[in-house]
Length: 422
Image (tube, rainbow, N blue to C red; front, side, top):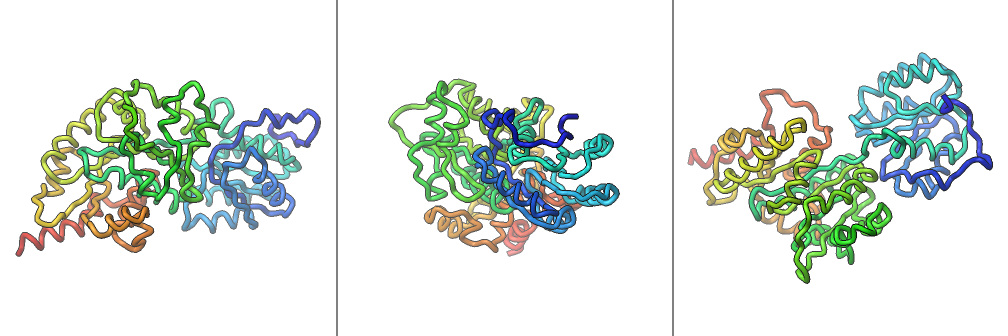
């Protein structure tokens, strides 16, 4: 187990061979100033440039308190003392608050193979023994994500409208913003409507380059190129925008976006795909290849027909994956006849994970200002619904009781009941 051998910087170190650490969020909880200083130095290394790193004191106890009410990052680094029993107890307690997919690295002082095996059996990703150098730390973190057998980092969420104009792009952008802001997960929005995409407008961005430059130059495509094309929106959110130009037509091969997705999966924890309402070989491949699919619809007959057809096709094409999700948008539009929500859900055999009420003023203000709903009216029910959709998609939503399968329908249903009574 050479991982347990103390390391030191020497002429045999080959920093050029260390792969860059992807865009992960990492929080370290240290017990000694020396380890805290070393991790801070590592965070400034060029190979850690994309990672979002925070260093705290207090060890495992501080981590447990921090994550009682907060989401866990992609990677937690814990410095532990020599008390093995306390370490096991702390890890067991921390496990109660860790989200799925979070990796844990333990830094200890005991070079003991039996301890290493115990920690690995508990699901710990790595055990490092002090003393070690900055490059040793960077190398171990890099290998967690770039080493042989490392699982892809990124989770790809595809949003598509059942019909044009249902607001699928708006929902996708707001959900991505909520994931990045609330869960502090590094997120990228890929606007795949190259001719008419609105992601740049929605975030008040006008990047000179975007996804078209990547897909139209496959011979030059690599992680560095993708990084140059990303437009930074917030600390945790970036945009791979559409050019929104009609200077040429965009007829892509079925696998045209595969290489882009492979690069994004390897470097970004969350990728939100804004897929245009179209049906061809590449759009079908994108939807069937995503980790999760969200179909956005409004409660009318055309949307019902299209939603059922789309959900049926995706279920058949993805028998071993999560079932596609449904979001109902623009619900409760004044004077518009609408299909009852329960009838819509029964017809398409899917309960909505979110029901977003029609609010022309709120959405219009956000769109015209290049802002998200949570920026315009953070305390609104709509902002909370969009945030809950993000938590659900990332596996962070609280488990609901069976009788509350559609918790977000209640306010909408009450409005329908009042109308009928009148």
